[in-house]
Image (cartoon, rainbow over all chains, first blue to last red; front, side, top):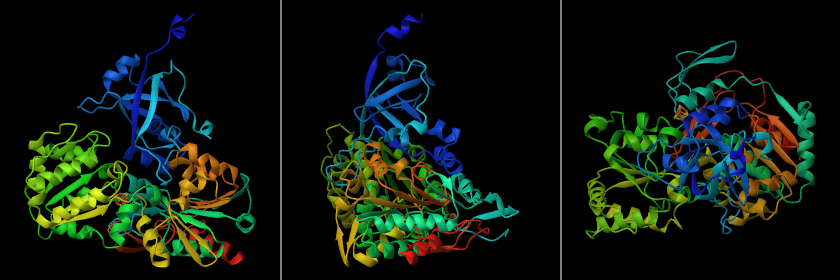
Length: 134
Length: 414
Ligand code: SF4
């Protein structure tokens, strides 16, 4: 029996900022449902110190959730030199869109670049499939 | 077809220097384009697909079903069109008028506000050719063109030798990036990358204005005043500056007031232009065409000859408040680009999707009509991000109808 599964995993709060990614965009043009697009989209880029605190290695999956949704995506190191603990980046795609609030102040503009969520290890759970998003 | 120049409709730069090689009516070689453009040009190969309830049907059945949905709708929504030709957009506007629809494109939740100031001549702007020939100070603010408009730097804004900029980036141009992360574009800007905290733009603008006015620039996040003063000095000395504005900046501002203030102060001391980094290849065209027709850029509702306008007619608010009862989506994928918390309401109403690509939206549509890729399999005109008109011919013969042809048929049948 894997005792690890009974222990609560560390959880961190993050602000997610979505951004563009040329490799993801190319993959999307080639196939909106292709593996390449999914691999470039279902990704969260974290500060190395946050990865450490979560006790996950780069490439492991993590659960990212808030009151709007829950997704399992791959965790990666952002590669940015300046530390950015508590701030995470995701290529814009249906995955981060699962977590974007419907609160718009009536102005028609969702907060795509200001998503509050909690991150924890997914303990090997697979990436959320696109088909299950809707 | 080789050695002819073609236009790439992969983004709003509409690069017009693309050469392709083709075999058996399929493009197999693309020269000069970027990674996105290359993939985009090669996609033109699709066979016509018509579906109703995810079952294959013929064209007439699909159009009939689309017409029935729109005819039965009391409050239809037409959305998308940023990746459609101006000809298609104009038919969509007519159609919206005819069926009293709400009409919107994604500028309502992206850069519509800035584009409006440009279309209304409220901010100083210029063309990309001016940028290539003259620009000495180039700011990328909340935008990463290296990923979104990949040839902006190489074709226009930084690397090329321009008429009045023969020594190019090494000596005569300064690239500056203001962003919350060190994007690919920020890396190119080297020492002129100004990293600010999320939501720090408003204060940064105020600090730059203070610096320009000879005051000590202060921010609550203690941005080094020395660096801010250095930036203010570069801007002051600009003979032909341009600020490329992206969603990263716009989403962080409460309103555009601070940006206009910055532009005003800058232009008292230097010569600075503004350009919006619109994404879809003809988003600017949609805004211009709708503006010409109604005086508004987006978020309109036609009601028996009257045009209503406001955020309540944006796709986001219409779906949120469930004020639409059917949707015609043209060349866009709201299921992928909008928050699920909002777009889930599209699942409750019949959707007609017209798109060259199979997308989450096409899969959730009652009617799906797969159309030719404009610029690759269909010709037309579009407006580049700097408002220059560009026309293009199809590069290969299409095996599927254009969105223009489909909209015309829907219009006629209604
Ligand atoms: S920069 Fe844009 S228009 Fe130019 S080749 Fe790339 S995708 Fe096409």
